Image 1 (cartoon, rainbow, N blue to C red):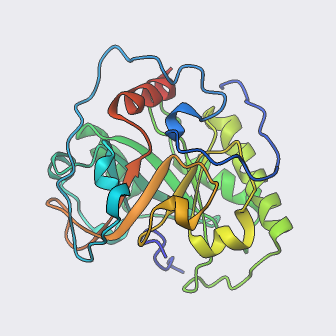
Image 2: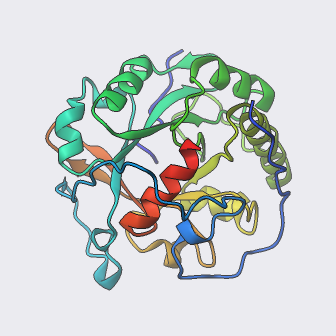
Image 3: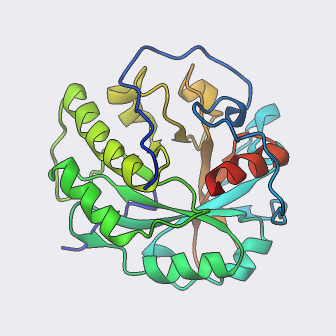
Length: 279
C-alpha cells in the first residue's frame, strides 16, 4: 500500500489512446527508449537541471543484488499530506530530482498540502507531476473533472498519474470486475490526455496488477511498486518508466518516512524525456 493513499477525509492535440491488448514483448532496454508516440525523447534540452546523486537512507533496506535501484541515475520521491511541511531545497539535494505530489482522490477530496507542495517543489527546482488516487465508488468522468479542476495545466510538468490499487482503508469496499476496472481507467485517462496533452502514467501495486492489469494498456507508461524485488520478477514482461522501490525512505527535509522512486534510464535519457514533456 502506498504511503500516498492514506485514508481520505470524510489544447493540445489529442493523441489516440490504444485500447487493451496482449502482453508486450519483454525488454531490458530502458523504457525511456521505448515509450510510444514520443519522437522528441532523444532531443537534448537547451538547459539541463542539475541531477543530484542518491543520498537517501532507508529504515528497512533491501538488498536488490546486481539490479539495485542505486545503479540508476535519476531518483525521486512521491509525497502527500502525510509528509507534513517539507523542506524542498534540502530534499532535492538529498537526491530528489523529481516528485509526484498527491493532488486528489475520488471526486471531491483535494490533498490539503497539494497547492503548497506544487508551488514549493517547482521553486526548489524539482520536476514535478500530480497524481490522483482512483476511487472505485465514483464515476471515472467525475474523478477526471475533479483532477482537472485542481491540477494546473503547465508546460514542463510531468504527465499526470492515475494511482490504481485495492485500498483496505478506503470507505469504498467495491472491487469491480477486471472488465469494469479497465473501462473506468480508460475513460479517466482519455479525459486527462485530452486536457493535458500527455498520456497518463499508471501507478499500481502487485495484487491489483495481477487481478486487473496483466497484459493491459501496453502503450501506457507504468510506474510499478516493487519493494522486495526487481520489477522484472514481480511484473514479468511489463515495461516500466518509474519504479517505487521503497516505502520507508529517510531524508533530510522530511519528518518521518517517504516513498523512494527511480527513473528507468540514464541521465541523458531523463533529460531527453523531460525535454519532450516541455515541448
